[in-house]
Amino acid sequence: MDYMKDFRLDGKIALVTGAVYGIGFAIARGLAAAGAKIVFNCTSEESRKKAMESYRREEIEATGYICDVTDEDAVKAMVADIEKKIGEIDILVNNAGIIKRIPMTEMRAQDFRQVIDVDLNAPFIVSKAVIPSMIQKGGGKIINICSMMSELGRETVSAYAAAKGGLKMLTKNIASEYGAYNIQCNGIGPGYIATPQTAPLREKQADGSRHPFDRFILAKTPAARWGTPEDLIGPAIFLASPASDFINGHILYVDGGILAYIGRQP
Ligand code: NAP
Ligand code: GCO
Image (cartoon, rainbow, N blue to C red; front, side, top):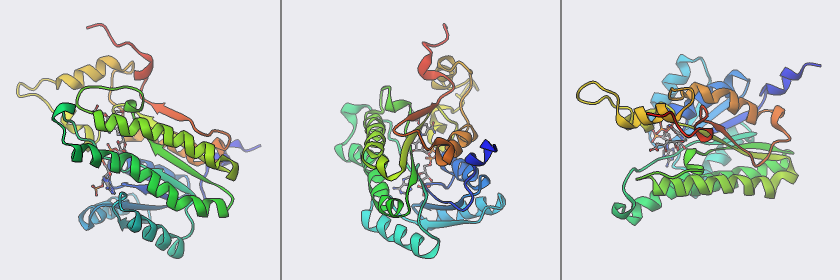
């Protein structure tokens, strides 16, 4: 019995939101390597061009859309265009996200709302747009990119934690509501990953020493390293493939053990 074929995605169409760089681009590369056809979206022509150059360098034939994931009409139009020109979406990765690091009492309500809009409302909007076709074709895979902040809080990330905590429960609810249609909705909860989003937390200090938060994360991670976007590729292929057909509503934490560890004694 060739069990490894269950990890292949040949003939599947995958939409990875925000897959321009960072985690989304890594996941898209992995899904392509497993056989999927890649579609992505971003917020500007500049981002789309940059991403297309990156995909060409990887010899991946990707299709890019400029679409703000918070704009439901734009998302519906993008999904309709994908279904017309490429085919119905088999795999959706809700990756696009933002963070604003502001002490809660100093955060404007509009900043809070913007983070909730991109990190929680948008996965609802995009999932709602693709689920009907998944039902018609007999099933599909939805992967929501959650976070350590789906489980933990910390200073200055109130909006992000609220959004990612909500995304964990949206994941469980999509699994509950649509599991009967052979749709599996799971989450990936990355730990601290070295991408543009976390670059401010890793900046070298004026004296050349590590950023205090950088040192903090190394002490909180059993592997004593930051994760890389590539660490998320295998988990994403697994949750996008038939190998995970009986896994639903699960958040797979890819965190190097942070959630299991009290932290290294200073
Ligand atoms: P990133 O480097 O900041 O990339 C974010 C991506 O999302 C960009 O491609 C951006 O596109 C896109 N995006 C943002 N707002 C959008 C919108 N309204 N519509 C469409 N696209 C939008 O982020 P990352 O570190 O790779 O993180 C990706 C996901 O993983 C996020 O959901 C993040 O919360 C989550 N995550 C990250 C970490 C980490 O440590 N890095 C850990 C856990 C979870 P443009 O460039 O066009 O704006
Ligand atoms: C932060 C970081 C984290 C990571 C990630 C951890 O400011 O604490 O940005 O939120 O992005 O979400 O899983």
